[in-house]
Image (tube, rainbow, N blue to C red; front, side, top):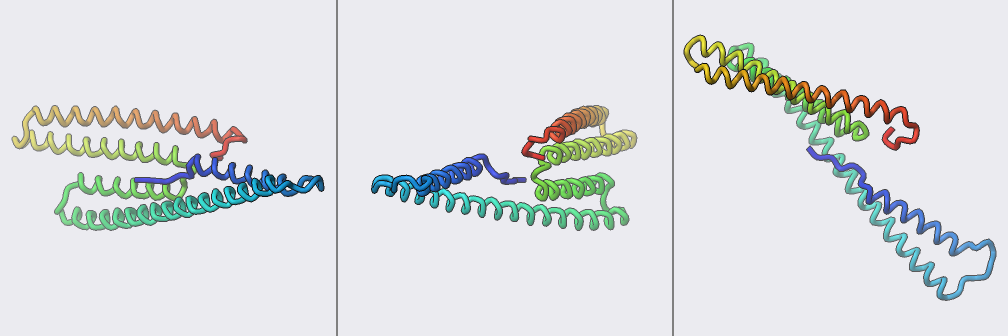
Length: 207
């Protein structure tokens, strides 16, 4: 997944444009004082040309960034549509006993993740919280998959189809998934606290 936020370089160019325009204005209007010399006039023309070039480049870059954002939105919507269709098909097959509950759970989480990715593309200003939310969803998905795998492995062991070594490995995977979820929850809490601090700061540009 990729997103193209407005880079600091664009902001710098905008500042340069503003500064250049201010210089041009002061060069041309000096409170009715002496007319500019030929050298000053030439310098003013050169500055105007530089400002025009900067403005043109800024506009071109903004158009590129806008097009990239629209592309990301379209891709995120397509992924969401595919996830919805996949889950719908999976539910039908699960009801017929063709696929396992593990695949059903996998596709349910796939839909949740696709929804979160779309929100991220639509709301870049909330990127920090949304990315943390994606990590939390992935950790929950991993834990659910490990839980279902452990249950299936234990059942197979009871029927003689899997060894105790396989059961122990599945248990370790489940424990590791629990630890990953705990870590993701702590990250989410820290991100929430940081966002609350930012919201209290009236001068924060991310508000």
